[in-house]
Amino acid sequence: MAKIIVVTSGKGGVGKTTTSASFATGLAARGKKTVVIDFDVGLRNLDLIMGCERRVVFDFVNVIQGEANLRQALIKDKNNENLSILAASQTRDKDALSEEGVEKVLNDLAKEFDYIVCDSPAGIERGAHLAMYFADEALVVTNPEVSSVRDSDRVLGLLSSKTHKSEKGEGRVREHLVLTRYNPVRVEKGEMLSVKDVQDILAIPLLGVIPEASAVLTASNSGAPVILDQNNEAGQAYDDLVARFLGEDRPHRFVEVQKKGFLSKLFGG
Amino acid sequence: MDLLGWFKSKKAPTANTARDRLMMVVAIQRDQDGRRTTTGNGGAVSYLPALREELLAVVRKYVSVPDSAVKVDVQKEAGLEVLEMNITLPERT
Image (cartoon, rainbow over all chains, first blue to last red; front, side, top):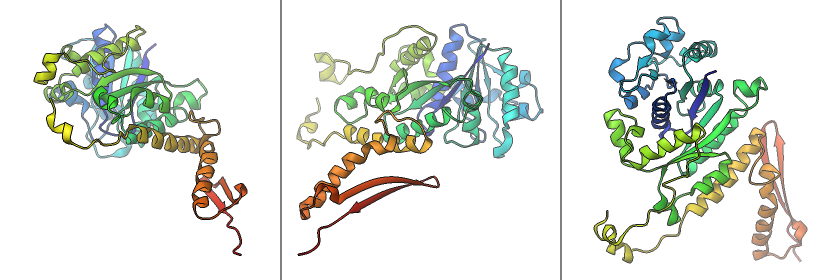
């Protein structure tokens, strides 16, 4: 039975696509057959982050409208054969996604894959609604910033009421908090909401804390999900996150200020 | 080392302000969605007693009034939440 996971947040620019790309890549690296779908119709970007933008021929909307079949539209990842990508359409037609269409594609994918990762667009409109509607679990991506936390809370409200599971009385979507762009130095100075603050407010279990890192930008520049960079803290944090999701018990790293030695203090290392 | 930083004035930490403001908006949001809140038992209403106390203190800066002079209530009308405040001032002598 395939598991459907939505990566959502409400607010834009907090790291949904970065998280979707690394999460899906991490699952595939652990041998899970994984597909990651871009639900951001009109503003396709997952293909860029995954580095497959030049191989998009058919997209999600083509499949829903019967202009292509899934086999034609799924893009195999260049590094891992367990991983496939389904790109968003660049159409400006907002109604291109239908609930029945999305359900059928997800059902077809469920026959082939272990995990279906749905990369939600920002906002709470149609695309975001459909990305979460059929989900079993949700990664709620949040920055330690007031606007992001508030929007995440709005999304939690929708997850508890506007999903297939909740409407059909089949239990609830399992929610996980992913805190991104975390800077322990600023938290220690009292300039940034702490992990605990955000957890207290949103009251959902913490899956991972991704430290603010320049590697996230360089990863997107080159189209290689940051989890592939295991020399970097953000990459390592995503690897921990995937391991935790699959049931491993790993302590949270990168949430405390790293104590610097005398030399690195002197030379700003 | 950050020598310049030594001379800069220290700004007050703002994370606590952020947390307090968020708790308030989230409590109201959850109440409107009909969700249970984690910041109090009664949803948005949980901050009302504190609000009333603070209002009373402000009024007392200027006039002397009994505890019962400030009344605060939240009413729901057709999906709209209305914060109702009633402050009774003493009659002029």
